[in-house]
Amino acid sequence: MRNLLIIVCSIIIADQLSKQLVISMMELGQSVTVIDNFLYLTYVRNPGAAFGMLPYQTAFFIAVTLVVVVLILYYYRFLSEDHRWMRLGLSLQLGGALGNLIDRVTAAYVIDFINFTIWPPVFNLADAAIVIGIGIFLVAFWRDLNLRGEQSDRS
Image 1 (tube, rainbow, N blue to C red):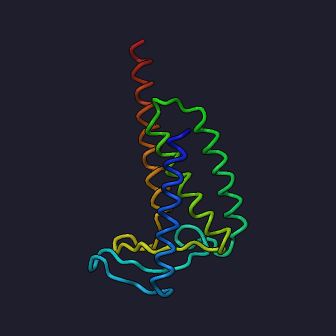
Image 2 (tube, helix red, strand yellow):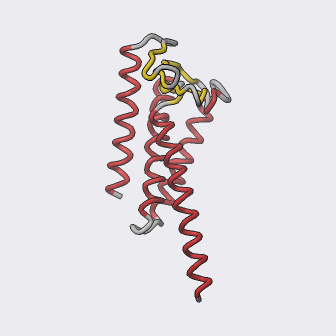
Image 3 (tube, one colour):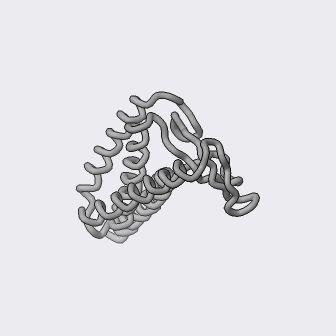
């Protein structure tokens, strides 16, 4: 549980600090080139979900996030230490979910600023943690299923 707290707190701190830097150093809608024709910092406020879907449904997103947080914590409890990759994936998802939840509760929108030209939606560190966490979890879960299948085939 200690590792969960370290990862979750690290993500929340990095996410919230990066958003505060964007708010304090950029104008809403401003875009700054980091790598020409590839990466920009673009300050936007997203009142919806991914891709701006379901805008201004703040109460709904808060409720869904709280349910997801409870499910992650519930499932995490049952994973043994040797499921470290699944635990890491869940920790990243939890940190990202809580980072965006803070925005929704305090401002009714999420601050987004990472803008790759190859991926049109603007996103933030919390979003990145969620997506990476889902990827890690799914790969680890799939590997675990395959290992169990190979072990049962040998029996």
